[in-house]
Length: 414
Image 1: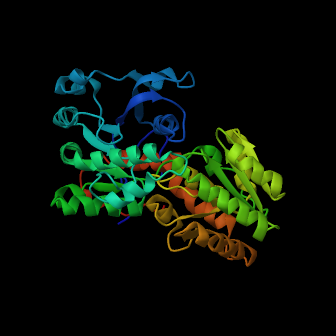
Image 2 (image 1 turned 90 degrees about the vertical axis):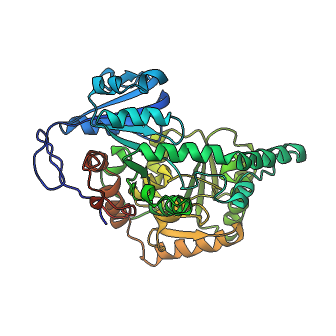
């Protein structure tokens, strides 16, 4: 079922059924330094404030770019376990960022004080090492490691699996205290739902709600180019094990050789040496080091496809940014966040192995050449979903206590 959405009002916030309601106070609890990174919590809180509600970020420290009006120091664990502290804050909603970081007793104290408790999982649905041990071992495989270091990495995975009973109990204890378990796209929600039901906790599965990440206004405003270069873009820490650098290098060489009329741009954060030789060999492969966000955003608006070789991701904000820019995505079907965004090949193609990836890219390029992809329609669909004020409204709607108003699988519609 679709989560309700009503247009936001500048001075008089409304409930999902259209009735005027009092100003809401929301707080985000972040157990690290708050930065203006990919997850744009500051921008989301600013959007909440713009529409007549009030939002505060509780963190250890803040970047200088944060408005003082958004900042509050993260309280001590002992303070957070006291209902009196929560009553003093007067929060209607408390959003706890990340799994298993905050003491379940802190969540209980917030709940006892009348605050709606939301756990923002930022997860691909795999919250337990016992969900899929083979997957855990596979994503830890790293060809850059020596044999002894690889064995140590696998041992760490096995240790995590062995110790997961205590970890899982802590996760479930936190979920018990939450009103809502927020996850960011459909397939991760289904994976987490299956995990909870396998633990005979259908009561907790009913708390799942999908609210997508918001993206910055630069990606959700402005004109969208329909005429696009025959260009594929990949970006991020492409030399890290998570991004499967060997697979990316293999695809870069394949594109260089088999698709000479298609540009591939690799925007690498960090060391580019692994990819520089490819750029020297193939004129249609270009490598950029530490591209500025504005430059990368501009390249996306001119390109057709975002390529990923990631072994794991949550719901990728870069993927959402690409879709809002009018691109489609080619990514592994083993990454549920990407598979959710791509859907039934509506917004790109998935692949299983790096050998199939070149076929997926060729297929997707043909979709563009045969006018089966419409950058404006793609952008309009995802901008409506990821718009800051739209996502802000969804968080405000979580104060509504009726779970029937919210469904766990709602992220692919505005």
